[in-house]
Every structure is written in structure tokens, then in C-alpha cells.
Length: 219
Image (tube, rainbow, N blue to C red; front, side):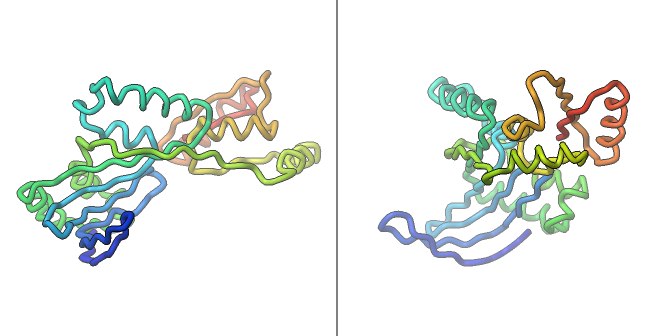
């Protein structure tokens, strides 16, 4: 929501002062976060970061069609398919007219940490401003497992304990980790369940188990 906070940032040898006009906190279900700032020259900017799939679909079509950018996205997609965590950054310059019109709509809604995901009208207000972004950059991460994780999980399985992996990570990365610790073998069939609620996921998983499926990944 609105958060008129003055910030001083250091970029190399330069010190930049800006005012945070709005801040959209990170929510796991939305897989993104962002904020709107106003710099010393009066320029209003929206900055966002989030999962590669979430940010990419919000980029400007003109930007995506530029052949100079396609090689970058091909490389990032390659990392994502290999199970790496890809976090993208994007930005958008807002004219004073566009920002003023949006801010008036925002004032009529409670754009708080949880309300804007639960209320469709609030979500639309935020979602509308988060479109036609320009790609700023990306980082690629790979989380290393703690020592003896695989051995510990094997002991649990041998004892008849069925382990679960609970994570906010992508299905690709979760699948990679599950195979690394031998929770999923190359011989097993893995079913990927996409669901909007926990209850629906459990119902689908129960149905699959009736047919002998042991491994399910849910999004």
C-alpha cells in the first residue's frame, strides 16, 4: 500500500535519494513483489522482482519480440529447466498522469499485505499497473543440500515414514531436489498436479494413489 518513505541508496560512487510511494510485499502465491518510487528528478518508476514465469508474462510484447533479448530468455529457460531458481527483475516508467489515475483507484481499495490477493477488485488495481514491463536483469540460484540429507531420508523411508517436501519453489527445482535425495527414482512415474487450493490438491492426489501412483508434485 501507500508508504511515503524517504530512502537514500548508494550506486557505485553516487548517492541517490528517492521516495517510496507504494510497496507491494512478497506473497508466495503471487511469486512477485514490487514498489513504486519517485526520484530526485521527479521521475516515477515501478520496480518488480519475482519468479521467471511470473515476470516474463508481464514484460512488454515489444521487448519480448526484440531478437536481441531472445538469446537471454533462451539461456534463462535452460537454467530453469535444469532446476535452478531464476529470479527476474523488471521496471516501468510511469507518467504523472498514469500514476495519478492509478493512485486514485488505489486509495479506494485496501491494498494491504493480504487483502489484495483475497479481494479480486484490489488485485485488479495492482495487476493493471504491473503490465508492459521492461526487463532489467536476472539472477540464477542453486540451493545446495545439507550434508547427509539423502541418507537421513533413506533411513526414514526404511522405517516406513513417508517424507514430504514442502517448498515455495518451482516444480522443476523441487523435482530436481527430490531426485537428488532419491525420493523419486528414474523408474517412477511422476504426476504434476496444478491446483488453486489445498483441498483440491489432496483430492487429486488421493485419486492418483488409487491407481498406484506414489510420487506427486503440486503447484
